[in-house]
Length: 59
Image (cartoon, rainbow, N blue to C red; front, side, top):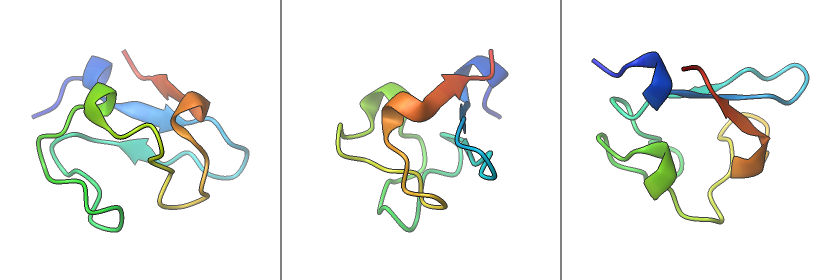
């Protein structure tokens, strides 16, 4: 199970999506086990479309 430090939450208003490496991102075709730091630079939030810079670690 992923630790909070490995999970990142979108900081956009009305979103709050949490990227969990244990789940990956099916919509973005990101496999399970992919750490946030390993996501491509052009990856976007599957809910609101925000870029990686709008995410903050939960840890």
